[in-house]
Length: 351
Image (cartoon, rainbow, N blue to C red; front, side, top):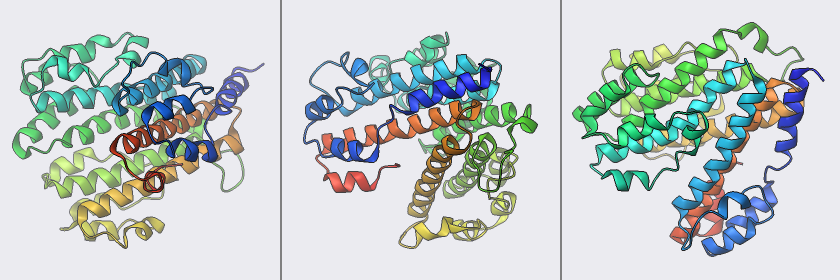
């Protein structure tokens, strides 16, 4: 069996374990976290949840969900071998922990408190546990950049710390860590771009479509958030990555130049404007745009299985679909813990 077909078949097998809409709705109807865990018996998450001690918390359950995601992604990364693109997406797993630790350090939490938000499973799989441990042990947030110098996160973390110290905006870390990850993805894509172009008819979805949407969505959201937090124009432009044809957004550099967020949004073409009609503030508009783009990314990933599932694109699509599923399960857990009505929780889910 050719390697690509083998990878795609393995990805399709795991795709068969993804939770459908009906089971997800049933999970959201759980009245307690104990009930949620019980309903997840018989799913692949059971073996991860059995390690979680009671009383359950939404955070502990999310960490268990993310362990399964790391395991599946790690397996796909190994199966795809020399396809660096799938490996570059694995940095998202490490970035999730890195963001958590940086925020903890910025907020002055102790090492013990910081570790409560981590499992380090994703890092252990690839031998990078020390990356996070070094930061947890740092004296303060200002010491962190020197500890990460020479890593793929080094420059962006240094920039994020500088801006945080000036603006005190904790979400700056999300923005710059995402930039580091997406820069790696863009570089990995560019080295084999010719192989990733769709070879079928119009309206197919494959690697190019998934990566293009991710990069161009990052560009739009990073520019809008940089404007929201009043970052200098030069700093904002440095965040913008070269777009990939097929992502639909072509005016990102023009967005940087305009004075207001509303003007910048007008430069984004297409149906992205539909979800923001009810937004009352710039921040609400950006959040609604992000929700729309995440939904589009989910749609494109699922479509990829239909058109090009039995090749490497199937592995990437699987990882992305599982990321969305984990986000939904985490949202359900948080909703149950907070006593939020199940209909309200379901309205916020991705899939």
